[in-house]
Amino acid sequence: MLSTALATVRRQSQTRRRAIRSTTANACGLYPAVGASGMDPRGVVIGREAYSGKAYVFDPFVLYDPAARVRLPSGHVLVLGKSGHGKSALEKTYVLRQLRFRDRSFCVLDAQGEDGTGEWDGIARELGITPVRLVYGNADGAGTAATGRGHSCGRVRGRGRVRGDHDADSDGVRINPLDPRIPQEHQFKVLVSMVEILTGGGPLAPHTRFALAEAHRAAADAARTEQRAVVLSDVLGALTAPRQALLGQRTIGPADLTEWGQPAALALDELCNPDRDLAGLFDGPTSDGIDLDARLIVFDLTRLPREGEAMPLLMAVIGPWIRFGWIRPGDTIKRTLIVEEAWHILSHRPVARLFEELVRYGRRLGLSFWAVLHHLADLVLDDAPEAAAILKLTATRVVYHLDREEAEVTADYLGLTNWARRALPDGANVCAPGRAIWQVGSRINLVEHIRTPSEIRLTDTNRRMTEHAPPVVQSQGAAAT
Image (tube, rainbow, N blue to C red; front, side, top):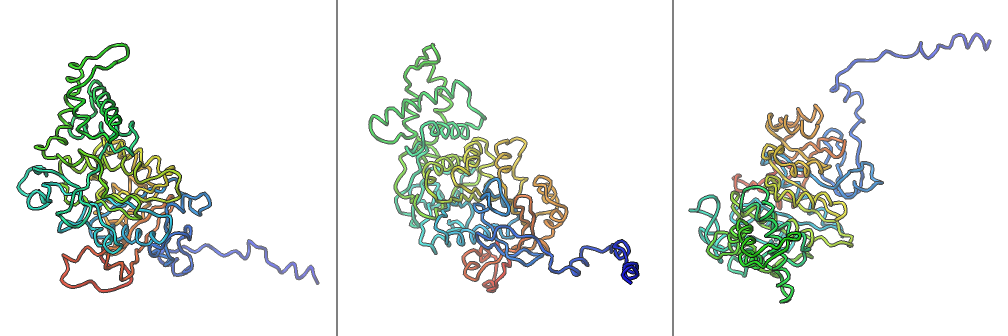
């Protein structure tokens, strides 16, 4: 009886069903519960994963933890995309949500805005924070000198100032590139970068570099004796009236040092001579108008000309100044540096060298660096190895809608999948405003950014282009950059 029953039982190979061929669209209907796998649930909610509907949570510091579900090699982020698709809204809501944590601090280099104020001005006011505003022009920061009208190459006659409040008539706040908080060897790196930017001739000649190093050392020694901070005019004075120096066993006289240092002296004269266009921007001690203990520091750079030397000079100064003045070894604060219009950093090799060092040691410093760009085509990466190194150090890439040609270039550079490559040019549907391709480590998701009504009010930058107030909706409709 038992043997008869066993004989009627079919073997597994006899009960196996044939495979069914189907399209991906139909498979989604057959298996509706299948969705993208999540990352670590700790952090802040960005929005929802478009295909699964699950909450999308992100925090680069959490994901750097070896215990995280997705381990990232760095906390640095690259944000790309056309204007009006949500880059700025993402950054602002991320900062607002992260500020709820006790160990988070942010510094924003705000290079975009309208009416003489940056895009972060509204958020700063909401949080009771005063942006540090750089006014490029006369001492009052008013008239054509502040706007740059009537002058060529983005350069204006008069003194540049950094404002510490919203009143244009307030006292200026200056950032000293030779601030005593910056170690002397790093001060020299800043000096070299500034001179290279002003000369526009690439790396300094060895004899000019030697003369500048001797002048910096002599100026620092004299300032230390007088118990004050060394400033750029001290270095200029030492370059034009040098003492003899030793080059190995050879004594170099003042005449030779003066000749060797002439290119550097002419460059520093642009920053120290009151009759020059760039005078007053950096020559002098750092004033007390910048609160480095604030949880959010906003540098408003919107009044600086986009062309010319002013913007890259400021970037060259701010990078090391932030590293040694804002970042403090030994504390537990996690810091994020967000740079709008980051091509001002990446397209100038002297500036990129300074920031590459800052980014490379980000894990030791507890730093997450966010570079915000419109297009990779803004950069000539083959001619800027430092810029390419910074981009490769980013472990998270957020890409909004791009034109087809730019999407192909970006997808090739970032190694995106075919579906992501096809999604980027579709700015009306898949990558509509508020939606972006998130490449976090090896995982790629389509994420829809969600804002609350109060966040929409604080992050909307389309007011000047719309006739009516935007509707209050939960999902981000048309964010601007």
